[in-house]
Length: 213
Ligand code: ADP
Ligand code: NI
Image 1 (tube, rainbow, N blue to C red):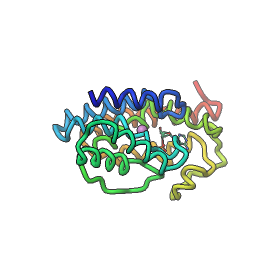
Image 2 (image 1 turned 135 degrees about the vertical axis):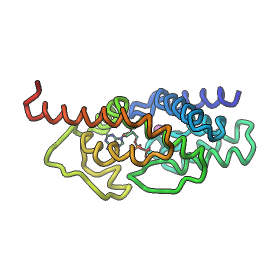
Image 3 (image 1 turned 30 degrees about the horizontal axis):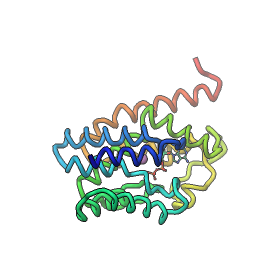
C-alpha cells in the first residue's frame, strides 16, 4: 500500500523529466537495489525499496533549491503512515548517497550502501552511456571536444557548471564508479557494464579519428 502510494507520487513528480532522472531510472534503481539486497542477504527490503523510489525527489537539479526538494520529500513522507524511525532512515539514506562531484561520505547503514550502489550501477554500462548523452544534450554540452582537458579535482560548483563534454564525464565520474561500489553483488554487476564503456570509448576515438572500420 505505502509502496503503491510512493510509486504514484514519484511517477507524478518525475514522469516528464528528460535529464535521465525519469521514472524508468527510478524503477531500475529500485529493481537493482532489491536484487542486491537478495544477493547480499542484507538490509531491510522495505526501507531499500522506499529509499530507491524516492532517491531523486529532493535532487537540487530537479527542484528550485535543495531546501525546496528536501521539503517535498518530507511533506510526502508525512502523508504516508510510517514510523518516525523509518521516515528518518529513508531521509538519511537519500541525503547521504548522492555523488555530487565525488564527495565522499561514510554511509551509515547497509540499506544506504545498497541504494547508492543501485543508483551508481544505472550511471554506467549501456544505460549509463545513454544517460550521459541525454543529460549532455539537455544541458547543451558538446558530445566531445579534444581541446578541453579532463578535470581531476573539482568543487561541486565546477562539477555542475564547468565547461565539459559528455565524453569527459566518463573520466570525471563514470569510469570511477566501479571502484566506489560498496557491495560484492554490485561489483559483480558492474564488471560487464564497465567493460561496455571502455569498448565504447575505444571505438568512439577510432571513429573520431576517421579510422573506423
Ligand atoms: P548525482 O545525482 O548522483 O549527484 P548526477 O545528477 O551528477 O549524479 O548524475 C545523474 C545522471 O546524469 C548520471 O547518469 C550522470 O552520469 C549524468 N550526468 C551528470 N553530469 C553529467 C555531465 N556533465 N555530462 C554528462 N552526463 C552527466
Ligand atoms: Ni538516481
